[in-house]
Image (cartoon, rainbow, N blue to C red):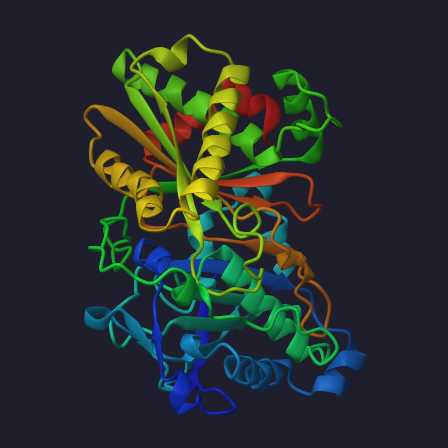
Length: 440
């Protein structure tokens, strides 16, 4: 597959940002965000002919609606000033790229287990690590057309001011403006109150960052798909009521299965599994401070760590892995709910897992570190820009390893796990008995 681009420009807000909103100070939670872009791609079939008549050129239409959306999401059109920990909302604009792929969309959708995540990086407008410098856009967009008339919208959001909830909020606002529904439904209009609720504290930058370029990065990525039927089987395996009040989430089930497999790979490579440290970002909008608007922009998450002693993972069951993960998430939410109401004293509870994660990331000789993040349950598949909903939503290969990104499958009841490991471990994982039993 070859992807070429034929246009690159800056798209500015249709209305200039007011002087009152010129400078956007990041929040305490933004200070803790990793230095990287959040990469996401939406794939669409060719628009019906009557929609082409309605919108004219779909790519010009997307550009026009993007400009209107940026008038509300003005920090995304600015530039981050690292030394001042703020975004200069200077209307400099979003990078907007148009490209062409020499394949049909169906050829990509039909790859199945043969899909190479690295091949999808060409749908992105920039590298995942190109972020946080004064010349880096806070958002970059690339629209790539396929030979069939379908197209992909690839986006890179600076994590400095966007978690996945904020990303989803922007995409759905852009879609609503594009398809003319925004006037009737303004639930996606942004609220920039997080820096006021949680002022920055001058924290040092963490080493949770991506390299600026993927050149020379040797890690591999593989997509494992767990369909709804496999998720139901995992629920039976873990022994909880499928329809009960404590119904196991599909994300925690897949996380437990993969963690168990990772321990077996570790054991095979080292004779005994090392201590294991697994961390999961936990979105807080719907779990603590319920009075906070769901359309609050910025980062509002914490980390839930789970730990195993050396060799411990070899002696416990899949159900035990699941219970450890569930207990970690429950404890983290409980602690944060209390901590964020305690003012100054509560901040340490939120900060502590970030610094523990920072330490364990660089302790490969004694600790096996894994970072699992879930993008499930966000309504990306609802993003209709006026010519239908996406037929697939994906991420790409990131320049790192020991990372798993989980996303909904197109049906909504399954999970696509995008696993990043070294090449040897990926091959071992593909042959793991549990992975072969549940993943397609």
